[in-house]
Length: 504
Ligand SMILES: NC(=O)C1=CN([C@@H]2O[C@H](COP(=O)(O)OP(=O)(O)OC[C@H]3O[C@@H](n4cnc5c(N)ncnc54)[C@H](O)[C@@H]3O)[C@@H](O)[C@H]2O)[C@H](O)CC1
Ligand SMILES: [K+]
Image 1 (tube, rainbow, N blue to C red):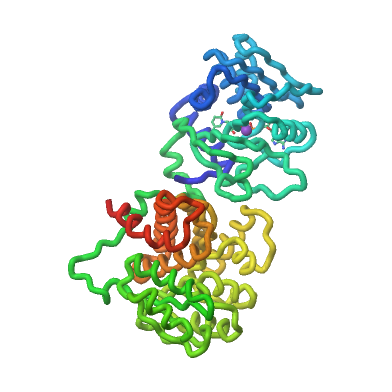
Image 2 (tube, rainbow, N blue to C red):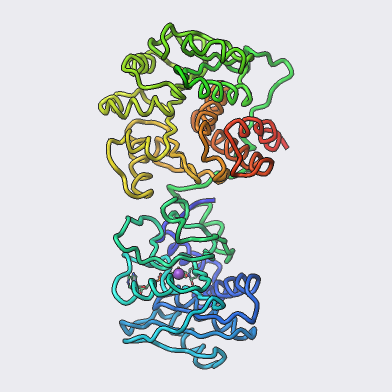
């Protein structure tokens, strides 16, 4: 599903209104009905409801929804904030309807001072102050109102997006004036901010309400941001013909491990085998040889004479190379890494210490060959970028720029991992869970992507499938062992089921 910016959503509204066609006020009725129904599903008529409506169409939604809840017997108090004596046309119409119908218990239009109502733990607050039309962070009276709502013991539902949150870029503020919702009922399509970790504290549970906006517009309108669809991943699956043999199923090389970090090499190698590679070779220090051979008997081991990766090797016989898990930070490892990158022609995945070493030698990043695949978590990315980045939106923007400038594939890992492509596009993964925030999870992803590259998937498809399978295996594992106990090996053990799900 595409992710549209606030401006594009307004385009989508207009297109729907013109081409369905449907009057704007009727589209608002449709939104309000969807919001009303979602609230009725979760809160009974005995719940006192206090609605805060703003001057735009977010407020218009809130007013129309209030009328509908009152018609269903809910006790609703509505506060409409008309500070600048200017309401959107649809908001004004819904104010007149509320006043005309007289069904809500209390309707107050605030043009100046505001006596806040008492908000108890029984009250449901509906936040219809601002939606996708917010232009800058809230200040003054609105910021005080948001603070009052957040300090109350009430449950909060935000319409479309928590008021105070912009649909894309939200930079950290001293005193953030953003509603903390228990539930966000977003209209038709998730906004970009809903994919960022630093906005999760405001969103609560996000539910997307279908308001039948133009599918044609969404399908055809160019968007920078997209999400991975299961159907698309299934369509990518390569078949294994009956005459397959290990030589034709891809030969993957993993350069991983150092003294005391054999586990990273084991996890990456096992994940690689479990993800369909015909052969896996692990280049690892001699001190890890016995451990590797016992832990991953399926993998061939090449041995580096030192306790760490110290020299580049010939990679002409491999179809993919994964470098980084547990590699360590020796200077000779860094030199071997750059030499390996210069002489390797097949697709390469760079992760963990490989990324940290590149970041530590800042100028090397610009010297990277094209088409590198990099899988940094946020802090590894900041080191690569050589700067402290304070917002997820800014980090994504830097990653998009780096992917374009280096002609690279950058997976910014997180709850919604984002693949930044050389053409500037971004694709968010939607599988996975917080149980995967555990040591070794990244090593597993490196092994999976390296295997998919060795199997012959393109760099873009190997990244998309790798993120998707890694997250899906994590979801399967979480169901089996729970999120708290989940360890990286559980993700590997769940890869067979994840692949089988794709083969259905
Ligand atoms: N397709 C859909 O998703 C539909 C969404 N609907 C609802 O419409 C709003 C967006 O409405 P819009 O009028 O564009 O913007 P807002 O209601 O968010 O507010 C605009 C209003 O607020 C003022 N304003 C902006 N920034 C600030 C600020 N920092 N401080 C104070 N005031 C501010 C601005 O001047 C305007 O007056 C969307 O979220 C949905 O809820 C439609 O109802 C149906 C289709
Ligand atoms: K809102």
